[in-house]
Each structure stands twice: as structure tokens, then as C-alpha cells.
Image 1 (cartoon, one colour):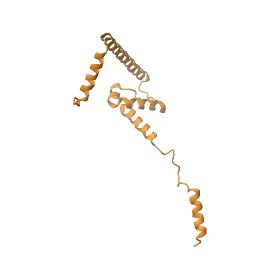
Image 2 (cartoon, one colour; image 1 turned 30 degrees about the vertical axis):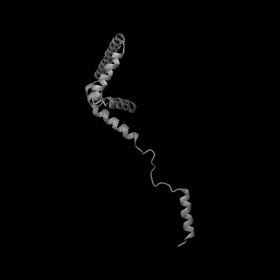
Image 3 (cartoon, helix red, strand yellow; image 1 turned 180 degrees about the vertical axis):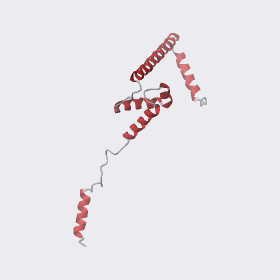
Image 4 (cartoon, helix red, strand yellow; image 1 turned 90 degrees about the vertical axis):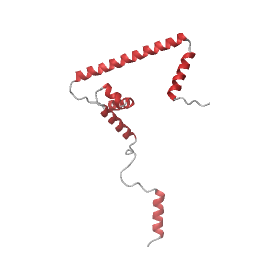
Length: 140
């Protein structure tokens, strides 16, 4: 008999069944531990945001000079977050700038200009020999 419940309800039901299979003390410990980890991660994020604010204030209105490697790292991490979350973080550059860096990074990855050479491609030696032989056989 097929289950026609929405996917969200099925996954919530599956999680509830999984938690109910664990002993109560272990379930309590897991919930307690996950809450502690969440609070710890939130504290780390708040610290890093404050550190970012302090560095921006110390730098003043001077423009930051980032290396290509730093841009690349920010672009990769920023693309994962997305425009909305980047705007909420209010980092050292705008979300549009980070996403533009990511687009350039992807464009460089699929750019084939390094494999191309200027000018006409060379003729293969066997084809050149065949043309010379045909020209010698037909003098007209």
C-alpha cells in the first residue's frame, strides 16, 4: 500500500520513530548535547562577526586590497551562503561583489583560451605529403 503523505510529514514521522527507538536517557543526552553544540557554534559566529566589525573600524575608510587567493576563498564560501545570508552578515565587501567574483571564477574554470594557439592549425604531415604527391602526379 503506497504512502501518499507529503515528504515533510514522512520525514518528521521517521525522525520521531527513530528518536522513540532510543532509550530515554540517551535521547535526553543527545538533545542536550545538540543544544550545547548549537549555542557554541552561535557564540563562535557572533565572535567572528564582532572581530570583523573591529577590523573594519580599525581599517577606517581605506579600501581593502585583497589578493586573488583571498577573493577566491571568499567567493567559494560566499556562494554557498547565497545573497540573502551574505547581506545579513554585512562583510567587508557587498554580496554582489562576492557573487561576481564567483561568476568570474567559474568562467575562468571553463575558459579554453589556454589550450588554443593563435593562427591556423597545422596540417598533418601525411595530408601534406599526399597533397605534394598529387601535385607532382598532375603537373597541369
